[in-house]
Image (cartoon, rainbow, N blue to C red; front, side, top):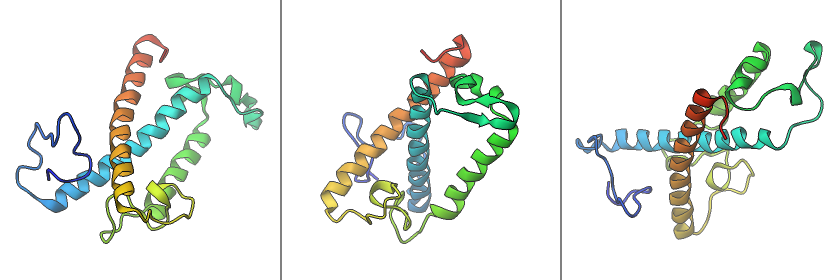
Length: 166
């Protein structure tokens, strides 16, 4: 697995727990698909944690309850402020994207979805033609996803501990 995407300096191939010791390629692929998906979710989550500190939608989040977008606090405190129907809509949307739109295809590379464009962005541009550029961008995406996973966990921890992510 030393030549797979995500093997980067300075650590190279790093598996301190020995998950790949048995050499199971199918299991490695599944873990890589999961890592890419979690990285993408973490990148969106990190943006979603930072942006509301500076920008809010105008209008109402829940007009019948009189809750404006500006009334919803940023960070973990938003969990209590958003109505249950709002959370149901969010989870339904995520489920539709995850289970219907972005289905894993064994014939494609991990993270490469038939319904998505370049690097999973649903822009209809299709796959990247230049293999070397694609490899470089996918490696960067994996590295950025790893960083985002650590960042969002850090923000959650700090927010839970202090009441603010900043």
